[in-house]
Image (cartoon, rainbow, N blue to C red; front, side, top):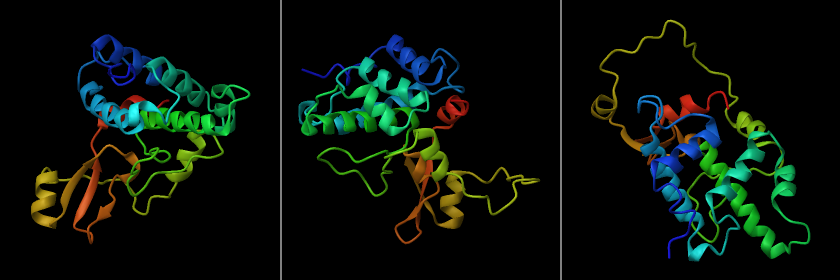
Length: 207
């Protein structure tokens, strides 16, 4: 039997509920404003990663469980405060690990960044370990580098597209759902990762 969390976004109504709860946007908007189908692929793969082994590694079983955690995250609560709001008193250390995994799952679904490791699985090369501050503060610290080049008066030519980037520069584009990997070079600088969910960024910029 499929987990309720896995099948939670099987209909447009549920997809709209999640978008409203997470980022206060509507999936009924034009696709150019919010690409719900693009996000849905991220949701499905992320939930699949965390709920393998019949979900024994996570406490979250429903979309409501995840929304409750995201609500705490959106309030800019610290990691400890999120734990306090999620983990019942008297929970054993073994059970606490399931709640920690659920917090990481909710954080990944909310910000499309690989937060924490996949329980009993391969997490990829660059998961971020959120341990103390609020998620907002933690992420801001990871993206706070001062730009090296001014963006003023920069105008890219029409030929500056992915296809030509591969043809002229010899870079192979790898589409990524992990925002922190955007523009990351790999494979001896022959591959570049591109975060391709522009409508997601538009939706969350004021969150």
